[in-house]
Amino acid sequence: MKDIALEFLKIIESKGFKAYIVGGFVRDYIMRLESNDIDITTSATPREIKKIFKDVEIKKNIDARDNYGSIRVNYKNIIFEVTTFREEMTYLDNRHPSSIRYVNDLNIDLKRRDFTINAICMDKDGEIIDPLNGEKDLENKIIKTIVKSDKSFKDDALRILRAVRFAATLNFKLSDDILTSISENKHLLKNISYERKKIELDKIFTSLRAKEGIDLIKKLDLEEALDLENLERIQDYTDLVGIWSMINSSYYKFTKHEKELIKKVNIVYELDNLDPIVLYKYGLYVNILAGINKGISKKDITISYDKLPIKVKSDIDITAKDICSILKKKPDSFLNDIYSNLETLILKGKLDNKKEDILEYVKKNF
Image 1 (tube, rainbow, N blue to C red):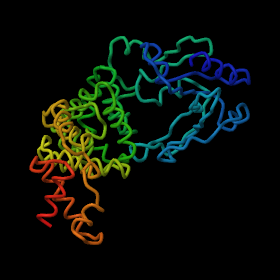
Image 2: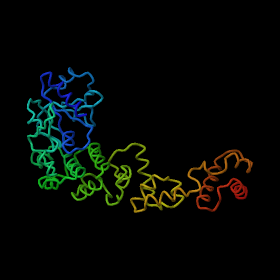
Image 3: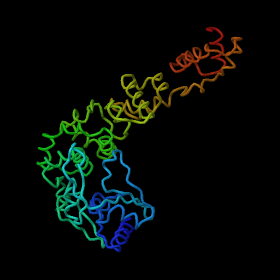
Image 4: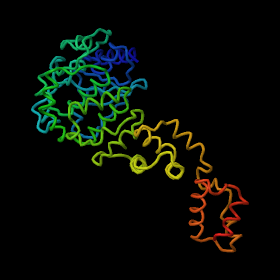
């Protein structure tokens, strides 16, 4: 991937422009971590990039105002995020600059970025360009903003959450300046869209250091600013939906499927996750998500589930036709009541799941 990225740079530079890999890919390369996202910063404008490459599209973000001078290029099946060198004017809403100005100076472009570790570049020859000493901060395992943290977070409050993410996922410390500024500016997170905040939170929650990220959110007292509740309920950090289920926040958007799962997990959280009726009704996955956050082992829940005599209604050893035949009735809603009764008795061990036993019970009781 690196070789193709350097090739990409050389193509741009062959047309008379400057171009560098910047940000996460370079940071991860230095740290010997795998990285798939490649950001390019260049003196070429989007219009000029379109003339160089064929497969180009305007970058489409959740918020269109994030698109300032950015396009996406597919080159040899790798997606490159290409952004023109720019200077950002006054910020108006703790997130977006009022305007931008294209420049022809890499250093000016780097100074508008968030953290020193994300402002390290690589040129077309694979050489590291690091005017802001990001490599030193990588070595010292510390997160520092490029400008004073107070200004950086007031310009873009999402950087507060990004600082937490990088500190947690990379196992770095936050600088004293950042810690002080977060304490004073955390309320500004209220001004950031829930969509943008959820992207950052999902990256924390799905990382190998999700626990450390959540602990840091609590330590920095960010729950109110992020509208997160019940973080103390989280005991398992291996499932994204499971984490969001414990938080149970109505402010963040989820898919229909995620909403249904979260609702079910919250219901069974208050129930006995080893109870056969609960296991049967809500299923293994939902009970595991709720149970492990209450200290019940996944193994115990799975064993209890595996012991269920039936797992779905169709496992009951009798058909609707059999019931109608023995009762001499036509199919109707009464079948639902009978099946519900049979499910309960079989699950509680009061009736064997055998056709002859079930028929005898139905004949006597219905």
